[in-house]
Amino acid sequence: MNGSLALAEEFCTAMKGTSIEAVDVVLCPPYPFLTSMTDSAFALGAQNVSAQKNGAHTGEVSADMLKQCGCEYVIVGHSERRQDQGESSESVAGKALAALRAGLTPVICVGEPLDVREKDGVNQYIADQLAPVLETLNSEDLKQCVLAYEPIWAIGTGKTASPEQAQAVHAFIRKQVSEKGAKDVRIVYGGSVKPDNAATLFAQQDIDGGLIGGASLKVDDFVAICQAAN
Image 1 (cartoon, one colour):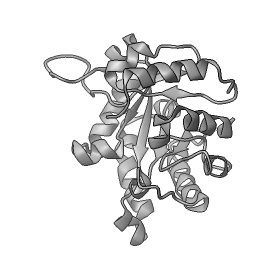
Image 2 (cartoon, helix red, strand yellow):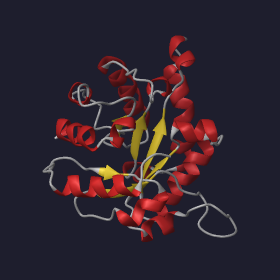
Image 3 (cartoon, helix red, strand yellow):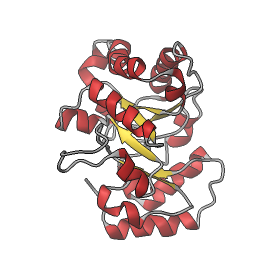
Image 4 (cartoon, one colour):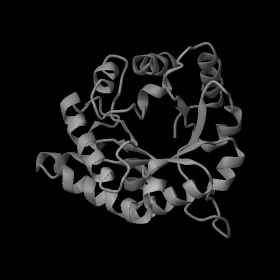
């Protein structure tokens, strides 16, 4: 819940003047700024979506509504929503399916807290988060998704998983989705990605890009990260 209309407009201006042809750039502003950021220089995404298609769900926003606002992507299952709103992995799977049926690409987030990592329980924790998604989506659906690994202990803390730690989890995720016939699905990393560590992270075999949090509030930092991916 950060940013402003002025920042949204600053991003639009900055991205128009930036050449990043080899990278799919997606900006996901808060709902009120979506229609102010429709621009061919980047794709537009939302930060959440309802699993419901329509009906009496006051305060919710459907996938069809997002599509009408110009969205192509939507984040589902971000760790902050799992923590603050109590979203379950089953709910996340339902949101991903709703997004797909509306023609949106869901960015499905998974990631472990620090205590799980310290107990060497990362793979099982990630597998449990992925299980409802793999049960709900068929192979063709899954191929249309983006998966995002965001270790909770590295979000907004300044701590970052080492390239080796991130790669190990990405390889595990790829193994899980490969068993469902979607080995080429894009898997991005989120967790204090910055201009000075982006290139090293993105160089890992199974890291296909980044889900940028805090650094996306600074236009210059965000552009530098995009250029590192380029």
